Length: 453
Ligand code: 8BR
Image (cartoon, rainbow, N blue to C red):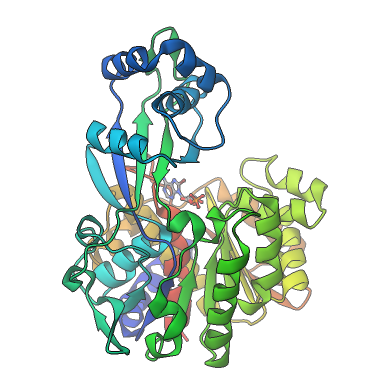
């Protein structure tokens, strides 16, 4: 069969099987993304008011965190001047209030757990239980309708309700996203490319606060869960990781005892100590999902500097280097499934064999293309429309290399006792948005694979 035929087969399989998944636990990060499209004149006025000299100073070197308005404006200018993304914690309440009054153009669900809850629960119709560290009204209203649940404790008993039915009004965890286009001008500065600066007014996700319901009554909460996807460890630092890690480990012990496969959505983790600690617990996970930058950052920790460089040196990313890196990671940690995604192709290294691994990757690539095409997917059936997007031609050379090295046929080969599955993705020429595509890919592939067995 051709790739087009394999793609068509995969989406039909997914439409039949995915809605049969009975329950997915999603931890831990959920927040509000407030998107503000910057306006030059407005920004210049604010900079003058705050003190231009001071703001320019911070635009030359980023502060560690944000405590003053000049630090906020300086950090935004830092991103603009370089066309580079950055994210900082906003500590000061008056600065948080300043940002709130400055406002936003759009509110969106943020955090991997929250984003996946809307996709799996709201779009695929799969029942999900999601960890929301703080459930404010603003946060609750970002959840789609559908089988999405948060646990609450009533007289010590766990009850599952839709977030919109939650009667409390907790804190807002807002990540302010200041976006600018390429060529955006502020005084004498011009953005070399489009990008964003993020100021996180969030004390909960940034320290991986885990709610009482997920500490005291975790076994009860996961009673009807078949799968779990965890993320949010990436925000921790060497100063604050210890306590949340203990809770995560105790959650993992319960999930392992019940033989519930758990996927870790890796996400870029700037703190090296935290990255190292994640590797130490990776064996408690069944599966991990990551991209080339994240895989390279792990190779750095494992002392594989040359391999790390190799992973970032070529376009498309060299699949032999990726496979070697995945083998190192699998052997070192014992994780059973590694799903790698990059622009143009995906690979999965698994301890077990079967075409269902490849077919799940195909389903995930269609979901990604549908999301790139439309900005938002509204139903599982709608993903079928993405079959019209052409298969990435550049992936042919990737496939050839994998054939020569591991004898890959129809996307499946073998390496050192593991199965390696490959697929060329479908690339949307003019994407509406690429935010949250990584989460769409990983969660679709993981639950797709489970539903196909
Ligand atoms: P990360 O943010 O985790 O890297 O995930 C982004 C993923 O989105 C990439 O690995 C790539 O596979 C996919 N992607 C991007 Br970026 N642009 C795309 C496009 N135009 N069409 C389909 N997939 C895309």
